Length: 192
Image (cartoon, rainbow, N blue to C red):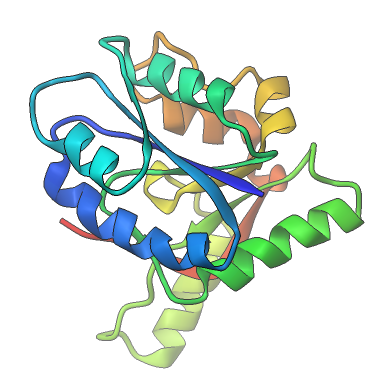
């Protein structure tokens, strides 16, 4: 169902919690493969990914080129782009499955994508937190740290990640636009 794509660069410590969070998705049958693309910078990211059973692609190309190549090599019809250190919360499997099933049922896989919500703060009062979530849902532009769930066919139609940009993930989210980007109820934390 889903190919997870992670572009690493000097991120061996951040990669571990991300891969650990994906284990439940693999056990549930949601994740078909995890592709880690690394520039071969010499840290242990590629070795950690390989040891975890991920498909590892080494290339000195730009981040955008590596993401596009990994997406092109993906075998599943859906892609989930995550940054190293991104840890989806416990509800991510159900939320991701629900989004994919609803998109298929409504024949909307080629015009919708989704991102995880930013985590709620335990230190804000409930009303303030509710207003923050409303602001995010209605006004805030999603960021690459929230991941991106997109049908491979839609990704290809949009032209994928551009190889010549410093922030190819932000560019792709901008090209998607707010109307075509849904906010999942599942949140994502960023481990440092």
